[in-house]
Amino acid sequence: MNKAEILSVPVLNDNYVHLIHDPATGATACVDPAIAPPVIAAAEARGWAISHILITHPHGDHTDGVPEIVAKFGAQVFGSRHDRMLIPHCTNGVAEGDVVQVGALELQVLDVPGHTVHHVAYYFKDEQALFCGDTLFSLGCGRLFGGTAEQMWESLKKLRALPAETLVYCAHEYTNANADFALSIDPLNADLRARADEVQALRERGLPTVPSRMESEKRCNPFLRCDVLKFQAQLSLAGQDAADVFAEVRRRKDHF
Ligand code: ZN
Ligand code: FE
Image (tube, rainbow, N blue to C red; front, side):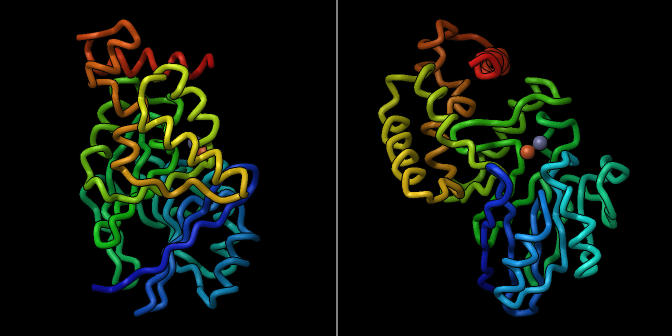
């Protein structure tokens, strides 16, 4: 198996642009370039030329760097086929079941509507890495800007079903603030407390909390626990439909 190199470049206030490099062929993908210069600099520092741009959804903080990277490297641009008109220079419309080939590396496209109606994620099975944009965050999830709570809950369940070892490469460093909210509604969760402490210690040293492990998200992230009876009971929603519980947790976070 071909070992890929993955590099997360922190940009703007709290975005990550992830680079995926295939040493065998030199192909390099960049996920959700919020801005171009620091991403180009990080790639060039390693001698990488960006050949593929993978977009999860057409928000400016995920696409604004596309034109400059395309101009510089002539990269191909992938995004949901429903969002093609909204993604600058989009050359390849994709949907669930498609495989994006980055050199010898293969990334599977997953439809994960909710944050936006046509949000997609890229799952790199061989490296057990998930690039999920603004769908799943460490200890949080994206706001509903187009999709319904039901869609988002289904999307989160789909991601939760990936192997426990999966590394979650989300697009934002929101973990500390997410931990505060998570603890406010799930205060008895010892795993969450431990993760919140770890997150705080990492951030105090200026270190990233991304990627996290799906296993940890399953135990700690309140948005992935909406069908867990013990969690529901803490919200006085025991036995309710999980999508409704999700909608309520999302609502509370929006007003936190
Ligand atoms: Zn977004
Ligand atoms: Fe975003």
